[in-house]
Length: 557
Image (tube, rainbow, N blue to C red):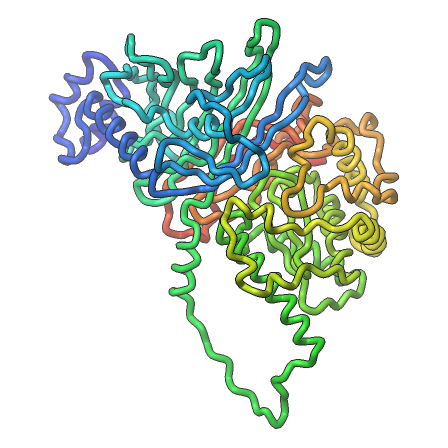
């Protein structure tokens, strides 16, 4: 009898009334009929539309235009990249952090619009896809048809088809929604907005939310795709896009952890035996380290750098393998950090090696990762320093929108060439020296695709990955992929790392092997759909999180 709600939601039509009469009464706060369930869904969705205004997460959209390929189906033929901070105080607005100029371009509340016979993508439009309808999501504007129950990961959901009522205007959502069956929040919706015209288009999308806090399901991932969209009479648009949001709780998580930490004071040492004064060399190293820490802390506070976590430890292990086999004793110790962004880039902050999440995503194996890290370690070994004026705290007090203009850690061509030479030396003495075949394949694939994906490999803070293409010793080891068709040159975007949108924690994807991979399924550097394994909020934030996207990952060679 206690499972009355479960039973009643599994049926439709006249059986609802019969079951309601026969079952035991539900708690006062639980819906008793399907109509009450729909009313709860509407209330929760409109409440979220108001609650989201309290947050200013970072939003990132990466778009790949596609072209037909006889062997591979579709391949990249150009790309766009947008990164900014979401501002919901006056509608839907993405305040750009990149140099992409979107000012002065009319926004049609759609996703793309048509100027001078060319399609112009609008970043605000992709951000709009996290909302079903901010202007009347209710029974007066929509019809709800119950379909079935379905699990999304561990979360049991009720599935509804949602269609606009007649004569309710353009821009209304048409598609399917998934509603978790405890509090009746929408956790996924899939479809499009109605009303594309000659001046603006609405694209199809699949939008996901994750349970960041009790009773709070926040927009997290959006996949969008169009095939054969005709515009300007003779032109056609094909594309895929991923939108990610994160940084909902920026600053607060660190404050909570700091207040809960237990600190033990270091005993005062006997100054007659040990001097606490620093030599000039030690003072300079300490000053350099302060500059590193200042920049890392600033980037983390604005959501561009992930807190220390599982992925950093993996990178640290690779660094240790390179150091031990090359008899390196580096002081201060080399650390690794991860940028949250999709663009492929790497750089050093003094003795801190930084790799982007997107770069880690697409690297096919540990040897390829070691090659990228060896290049950055080469900068450290050669003493290529960062701008130490960042040790002054006033150098960090800049607006978020000016971050990429203020900070820059790219090296000169001469430093890049020297670091590549040192990387080859380090790799030839490392455990990875006999595993570099796939690395050459990765570099060759990136070189081949760079004209089609220039925005993916355009670094904003550091160096483009092709800067290591002069690793001729590695490139020479590149095998003939035709002799081993199962070799993977590069993974799709999102192939290795998942993120927690509330605390910005990054973890490695642990997906099951999938066996033989067809050539069309390899998709190096390409955009794939999100398929999150949803779970409900748990207070144990250290437990393995499975609430993040798991794009299809090719089998590893």
